[in-house]
Length: 317
Ligand SMILES: Nc1ncnc2c1ncn2[C@@H]1O[C@H](COP(=O)(O)OP(=O)(O)OP(=O)(O)O)[C@@H](O)[C@H]1O
Ligand SMILES: [Mg+2]
Image (cartoon, rainbow, N blue to C red; front, side):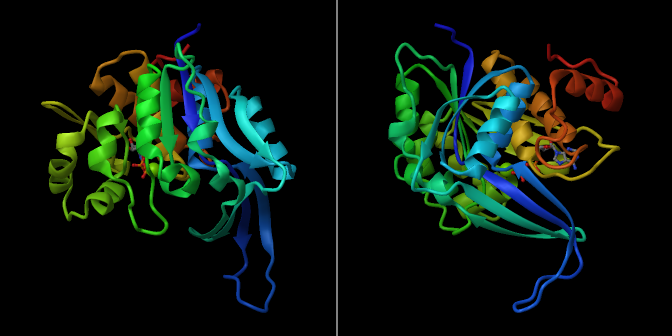
C-alpha cells in the first residue's frame, strides 16, 4: 500500500463573486456588478488543491449535492489532480455556496452551508493498514456533522496510523466549542491564526494563549500574516519572518496555502523551521494572485514564480 498520501476532511462550496458593484446593495433596489466569477471555494478545498499542485498525492473527503455546483466542484478538484473518491453526493441536499460582494477594497459574504453539514465521522475512511499518511481537518465550526465527534475523528486517525493536523478557522457563532484540552493531544500540528487562538483560549495575549494550550500541545504552527509564523514543539520555540511580497494582489486563502506548504514538508519528515519556512513561502506566493488557488495552477508555474519573486530554487519537483 502506498503510504505518503494526504487525506483532507472538510467543507466544500463554490464562491460566487460579484465584483466592482456600483454601490452597496439596499433592500428593494437593484444594482449592477461589473464582473462575475464562479470559483472553487472553501478553506479545505483550497488546501487540498494547492497541496496537489505542489505534487502531494491528495484525496478529499466531503459532501456535495447532486447539482450543478456539485458537478463544478468535482470538476475543479479533479482538474487540480485531487482524488474525489471519498466525496459523497447527496440527492436531497444542495451544494454549499458563498456569495461574495466585492465593493472597492471591502467585501460582504453570505454563506449557505447546504450539504457541508451532512459530512459525519462515518464518511471518513480509516482503513488499516493506513492508506493515507496524514489527515488534515479545516474549518471545524462550519462542519456541524463533525464538530461533536472531532476528538474521536483524531483518535481514529491516530489508531489507523496517520499523523494529524487541524486548522479550526474562525467560528462564525463565536462559541468556540472545541475542547482543546481533550482534542489537542491527538492533533500533531495545530494551525490557528492569532485571532483564532486568542478567541479559543479567551486570553488577551499570544503568550498567555500559548501557556494555556501548551500542556496539551504537540506542535503549534501559528500564522501571523505579514509577521510570518511561530512554531512551538516541546522546548523549541521558533519565529520565521514572512517572505517579502512585491506583487501583492489579495490574501484570500493565504492560511490554507501556508497549511499546504507546511504539511507537505511535515509529511516528508522535515524540521519544524523548514516546515514553517515552506508554509510562509506558500502563504506569500498565495498573495501574488487572485483568490486562494490563483498562484497554484501547476508545479511549473509555482517554481517559476518562486524563482522570480525570491530568487530561490523551489524544493518542489
Ligand atoms: N501580506 C503578506 N505578505 C507576506 N506573507 C504573507 C502575507 N499574508 C500572509 N502571508 C503568509 O501566509 C501565512 C498565512 O497567512 P495568514 O496569517 O493570513 O493566515 P490566516 O489568517 O489563517 O488566513 P486565511 O484567511 O486564509 O484563513 C502567514 O503566516 C505568512 O507567512
Ligand atoms: Mg485561516
